[in-house]
Image 1 (cartoon, rainbow, N blue to C red):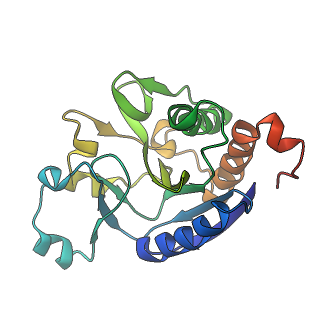
Image 2 (image 1 turned 180 degrees about the vertical axis):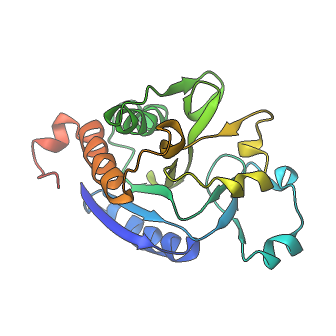
Length: 218
C-alpha cells in the first residue's frame, strides 16, 4: 500500500487526484491511501443531504464555506482543518468479503487508531461510521468505479466542531459530533501523529496475506 500525505487541499483537487490514481489502480497499480485535510466544506452524498442543510447557500457563501455535491454514498457531512480525511483508492474485487467487509474494515482502522490514544470507540447498529457512546467521531462515505474505491473516512481530531451546527449530521436527528481532542479533554495530539497512527492501522487492517506476500507495505 502506498500512503500519500496531501496536506490541506480542496475537495475538487483531492477528487481529481483520486480519480487519476483510480484509473491506474483499477488496472493493477498499487493501492493508495491519501491522508489530508480540507478547507471548510459541506458535502452532499448520492443519497441526498440538502434537506439536512440548516442554512441557505447565501450564508455558506458569506462564511466562505464551499458546498459540494459528491459521488460518494451517505448523506450530508462537513470537512474542515482539524479533521483528518483518509481516501483509500483500493481494488475491492480481489478483497475477501467484498464491499461489506471493506466498509467494516474502514471502521476498524479508525477504531484501532482511536484505541491507540486510549479511546474506546465502536459501531452503532444502523448508524454507519465510528461512535463513542452516542457521539459520532468519524463518518464514512465511499464511491466506486471499476470495483475500485475512492472517497472514504473523515475523523474529527481538533476541538472546533462549529461547522456541524449548520447541518443535521449525516441526516441523523440527535447525532452529536465529537473529536479526539474533546474526548481527551484537550490533551494536545498533533495532526501529524494522528496521521502516522492512522496510516499504520490502515496498513495493518488492509494488508491481507495474499497481498503482503508479494508487495512491500509502506
